[in-house]
Length: 511
Image 1 (cartoon, rainbow, N blue to C red):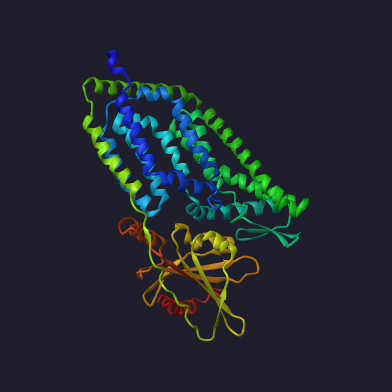
Image 2: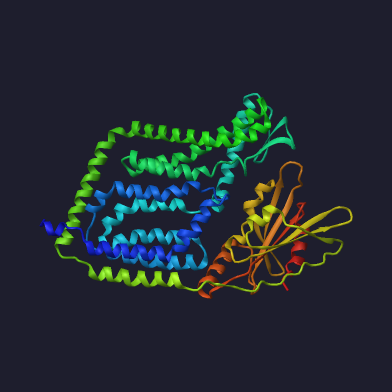
């Protein structure tokens, strides 16, 4: 092919820089505020996410020759991909849904190279770009998923500690050692909160993806190695729990839940990485004979794709229309996203705690944990008591401007010492509630817990998904921030008839 047809298309490279700058401006809130705040949040446990973009940049740099060879003619498929990504970006940015923003941003990082330089370029950058999805905040979903892994970890830990000759009692995710005493009470480990360590699954999976990319020649082996990070993380977590119990029994309980608890997390994670390396070596040993054939096939496919792209360029497929179409759809949306006015906070609905016959209501100050977790919310709590000591609690949480001013009660109930049963929808007097049976750990009584939401317009639901979509719609379309009120009721008995009677009374709390 003539030398002039192998030159780097400087003009299109310049346009790609322009497109990426526009994306940085349009997504600046996500890049410089939302994601950094999430990475630093203790509840998200995402310290590893700071290194993900650096890894992606390192991969792009190491593959720069391959990227140069992938330069081809513009591909209209990139424009088609950019359109839904831009729509998702607007919804995410206006609705404060950082997951939507990140998905849109990652999609555009694929769409722009595809539109300007063809599908092969998009394929070449796909791996480092898709690695950015490890920056996705997943704590709320991971907590729901890992509740089963925590039960497995606690049960296996109990079994191992018992066969080692140590008396142990397990109640759900709570492991205690009879006779081992701390300064403030009996020794116990709550696997559901401070000692779970199971969020390291995502960090270990991210490491396994990077390690597998450079050490495993096929995507099948890379997927297998990444999948192995889950049992490796569970094994590491079980090892940590068992070792803390043994240290508490043989040495000092305070030392076990203090320095050793914190230090063992780093040691176990390092051991998990070594197990990951060993797993990679085992995969190599099992499938080593296929490495040469796989590499030859990949090289052959790359050469074939290169020839096709060069042929397309030689045939004069300049794709000016594709480039123009990309800029027409991308730049105005990014401009709108960067200058659109912020949604306006609406007036909060008024609420009135009802009078319940036979009970006296007492105001309760919110805990420090509640005010720290529900950022910007107004929290109003009442405990209703009878003369004989029976009580139940009602809480009204009114959301503020921050999306974090409301959250899923299912995420905090386990840390309060409860195992949750299967929740279900209950409707009383036209008001929808989610009812959850709670099995208590330790000396606390079993309970029933229920909640419902309504906004300033009286829209009611007990489904988080319905509330979130309504909130996103109003932020995006109506340019307003809804004020949601979450009503929760906690009854320390499993008496559904009594709870449903309360629901009929509490459903009228909105004025």
